[in-house]
Image 1 (cartoon, rainbow over the protein chains, first blue to last red):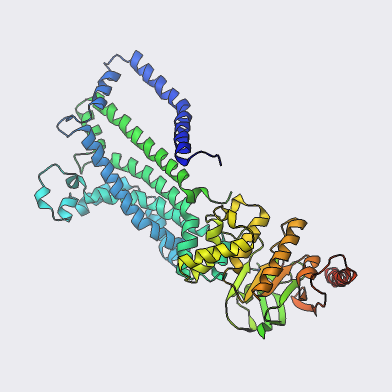
Image 2 (image 1 turned 180 degrees about the horizontal axis):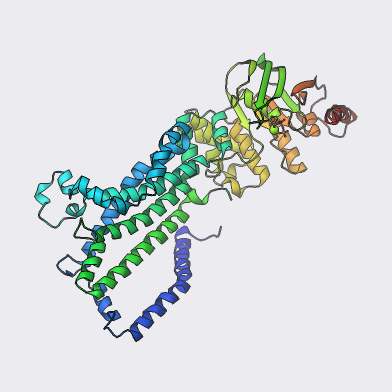
Length: 288
Length: 245
Ligand SMILES: Nc1ncnc2c1ncn2[C@@H]1O[C@H](COP(=O)(O)OP(=O)(O)OP(=O)(O)O)[C@@H](O)[C@H]1O
Ligand SMILES: [Mg+2]
């Protein structure tokens, strides 16, 4: 412990993190430089064309809405799918970890369903859910012909996102709960804790780091799935859609801008969650 | 008054090949309320099993346990503190589990932590404490509900001698003031002779009681007095005969 105020320490830690990042930026910068000096714009677009797109994110592109709008649509889809995956997967995995009977009952189904790529389910999902969006589900028909993000949240798409996210969460949660040392559970029992109390105050906190790992894996998977799904039939919005559409129109500047955005958002997701996980006292206070 | 009694308790485990292995032969034991009992015995003779049966972590194959109230405290050898909780939360855990109001939990835990000298460390996490401090926390957690019976399974085995002796004195004093019945499992004969009102020695294959004696040593006990060393030697002899078998 040093004597400084926590806020000061946090600022310092923040700058330390930025400094830690710098060496990793060398290669991207070199690639950018090579691109800038050696690409003449005939085969690949020049960096300036791509950066023009990136620097004007609010302007309409190819009548598909702005860059920001499409990024927003993809993000909202991912977050909704992830939310469903968390709400379903956490208790499910927890039950599988804590209850042998439930695990036996469900493990075959989970093992069969898990390797099934969400993308493989997209056509089926479109057939089942048609192009029903949340506007219709919520009965907000007045929104139907406006540009509103609810119109872009097709049930089928959210379904496959949740599908992609739910299995890492289930498995990690299950392993986390099963891996809780027996002596903690026994200690709680002899100290008079009931089953539900042990669930809430021993199994849950002891497996939190693993549950969190599951969430991190799920975010990464969902981000991959959404881009692929948006490139397939079933939608005409989102950053993946913009990527494919610009390819069809041979607007490679837009296409590359999309690729860069996808990479950066994926990076922010994974680093951000890692950072949040480290900061979380619960995850740090584990036995070493 | 009787605190608890075992009548013909038996327990077998099946080994990997499926063969039944008798761990506890019939054990009969009656313990008076407020008695400080030390349980000695060679490794594998079933001391831990006996405590687990008493605390209902395990059930006996046959026999009867009679117990007044079921309010138990249990202190494990080591590493049973919850690493994600602060010292204070660890000590509050049994109170919370029994539905005591949060404010009262905190004040009672604080009181208990003062008694074991860890109040200043209440916000630390277990891994930030020394082994001796961790075991003091474990003692506080075991005693905070003022249980009728406190079970301890070699709680000081991993500590150095000096720390062990300090904790022996602290434990003895605390349990006296709360008139707790204590069953203290140990390998350390000197530890047993220093603390116990009564020493029970177990033999193995199957686990059974081979010697049961109420100590007549005066308090406070002096480890260097001839009475003390006499008792110590006699138990050492019993112990060696057992191990030789
Ligand atoms: N869950 C179990 N399954 C099978 N055998 C067991 C089990 N638990 C204990 N045993 C056996 O029962 C016997 C007694 O074990 P116990 O742990 O009670 O001994 P102990 O007296 O506490 O030994 P130590 O002093 O080494 O702690 C041992 O031989 C052990 O192998
Ligand atoms: Mg043992």
